[in-house]
Image (cartoon, rainbow, N blue to C red):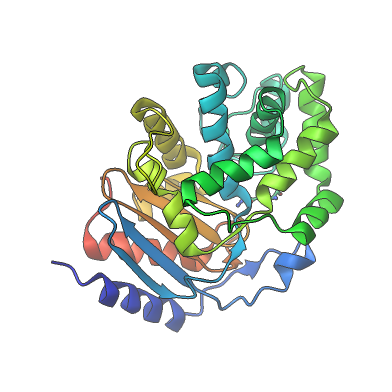
Amino acid sequence: MEDYNRILDDILHTVNSVDTPGKVASYIPELAKIDPFKFGVSLQFVNGETYNAGDYDERFSIQSISKVFTLSMAIQCIGDKVWERVDVEPSGDPFNSLIQLEHEEGIPRNPFINSGAIVICDILLSELENPEEEYLKFIHDLQGTDKIQYNEEVYQSEKSMGYRNIAMANFIKSFENIDNDPQDVLDFYFYTCSIDMSCVELAWCFQLFATHGKCAPDGTLFLERNQIKRINALMLTCGFYDESGEFAFRVGLPGKSGVGGGIAAVYPGEFSIAVWSPKLNEKGNSAKGMHALELFTTHTEVSIF
Ligand code: DON
């Protein structure tokens, strides 16, 4: 029987003893001011066992990890029709790249790069009466509480600095792969990125992807097993942009990162794990977070490969 408390404490000690290079996201002041030395981890098994270490209870901006939640909602709404609007291939390009969109006529490579997530937000805008409320409700239902909220300052800053996203939404609209007003789509996209969660809360939400589609608090089926298979496959192949191969190579779990420094990952049928460390590597993924997850799967030998 593994002593997971000790394993997480050892990982915390190891990652904190290395001077990992990297920089906190600085494109908005709310992220730039975060203490770069924060580190938290929460490991939650599907049987309910939970192990935490470091700053596991402190909330941070989930940013692009939201793309997994919006994709899940879009699949709930329109099922396989999602794939008529967004492809399922790794991009090999940075998360905010516009390059492939021209050749591929406004069909984003996958739902986890910004262009893909923007199209997913357009789908939700068309399908839902009150997208912002329903997005928060989706997260509250997963959590079993209504404590998680969006961060107004982050939301406003994202809106005022989102030049590439604005370009992207308008470019996709020119290929007719956005139905709504691009400004409304972007407002919703920025809102979805502006949610604050702790490692404990994030790992709890990611139980959805570890339990083949069940909502953690009461076991309600949120998504079909086959739909979760697809989301997990996309996390493995596309969850870390042009570092997805590296993450699979080093960690060996499906996962998703955000520029707030969070990473959430799952071992389907076994556990979810969330780490947070704000310093990002040059690909925009948490440098210590990746290191910590690599240490975890190497030490416990529990990767999916
Ligand atoms: O769209 C953006 O630029 C951000 N709000 C989210 C980007 C992000 O988290 C990319 N992840 N590593």
